[in-house]
Length: 455
Image (tube, rainbow, N blue to C red; front, top):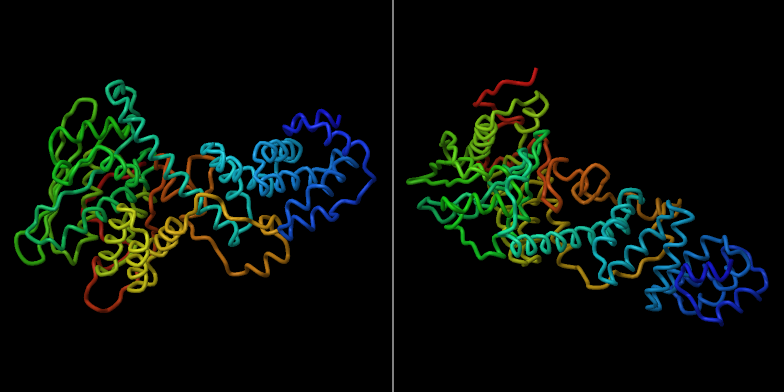
């Protein structure tokens, strides 16, 4: 039995067998556990051997041995002990988290993601869970980048006929106006449209981060996004049956005109939607009109709940939204410190701008990311009375709380986005700053394009 245990854990040394067979009994939660909690991992190995020798069914000792092996850089052994512990106690959150850390350090990204997903879904809402959720975001982003590279490498072999009919991507809108200040709206407008379309059940929407990675990888400039041949190629690479493409312009003053259309990837046919025009102060109203035009052009009937969800806006403050847009651009360039500051500025201008608050946390996570997972005290990975008291009031933002099971990342902005990460915009009543720099005037915003509702 002992030999079987050690073989499962990847341990084959004869010395281990002798120790396990000849040790005196020790109680559970003995010195091995105390040393683990104190961070004295090398010293914990011997008492943990004795504990396992006394009772090979002592799952906590087996798990703690895995932790000790991880911290003493014996990753093969750590993986074996932690997997053994989980095979006997699948709900052990400490073993789940540490096994994810082992996989991450061994370069097994997908396996690490799966373990982190399980932990973040079931773990206590405290600071440690937030740290793991942050690493999960980075790993998801890394996996997305690898997927994009792989798609480009096999572009000629991709079969667009296999693209799901309900999938859609939104490209950046090109700024054709005479006002360079509008350029920052390119990514913000796309971000909003993606968020709103993701609220339509049955639609699968490609996240903005994946779009940005593809643009970076193929070296496509903003001007190339409006070329006729761009949309079918982007749809093919993004796995989207439809691609929204458009421009916005404004000849004088605060006037702005948004043109959008949909390209069918398989046929390469462009279906124009009605143009939308108005003033920059009514930007959110215009964005909603664009979204409803796109939905109308696709012939989709909305439910009342879907329509009301789309109507709601994240902030009524134009200055806050412009700062948020700048944050997106900084983030795409890998300037996470600048992105954090821009998002924080947006949140300061409108304290109720939930998407900006989440973006502050997200950009900080990317700025602080280290190649090796930080040391985590096992006791902080499970909920106890002490952790509830010490971490009271610490709540992970909704956008960083992966709740997988139905789809990939935390019901994301909506449960309809494809694997990866997209910053969400919550449906909520907006906060108005009273400085005159507002967009829209109410939440939910007025519906000016009336579509038939589902019966």
